[in-house]
Length: 180
Image (cartoon, rainbow, N blue to C red; front, top):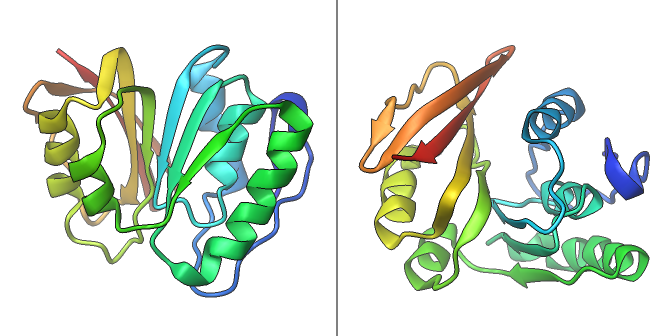
């Protein structure tokens, strides 16, 4: 896996052992191109895997970056990837190794961007979005992005969130939700 843009463009990221479904380079590059400059923004990467999306956000200017991954097998690799990034960019990336559902229930911060990338067989995507909306962890004018398979569609509105954009990458879809 590689970083597709920003200060670390082209840098290779270690892939951890265990099951991982890295966000495709083309999809990641497209998402970040849509979002534009992240300078001074905050980013939360949920179901982080190797930490690539969080590192990509930092590479593109995000100054407050957090990630969450529950798979204990991935901890060492994630910490290695993050440590190198922090040294190169001087941006601290907060790492939380727990279930995303628990993290969302405990989270007291707000973020400009929240990226959900649950495994494709995961059946509780809508519940995650409802929890994030109810817990008010999205900043005003922020965006929640969620990556999911085409055969498991999501609604256009969830509480105060509305579908602002949808991008299709083969059988993968990324919805961009904003607050009303």
